[in-house]
Length: 107
Image (cartoon, rainbow, N blue to C red; front, side, top):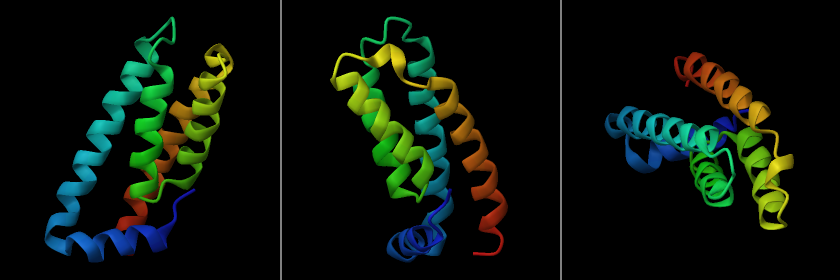
């Protein structure tokens, strides 16, 4: 679910002192994008929001979330946004966040 090598790489790139702030910003921005996805009942901006979440997820090592968003982004690009498993994406973010936060201590 989490690519810990990517997490370590990011921490090394931004520095340990800045890493916590980067994580906080990531989680906040992804949560906002997921909220936009949840409110987009007509799924008008689905593809764009999924693209944003995918990129953010890849940056912080949330591989499973990124894969689901990539699949949803492709579906949306093909006019099939109504078939995107939004509950699955939301659950994966929640579960990934829990795993991520618990794994940070051993990083």
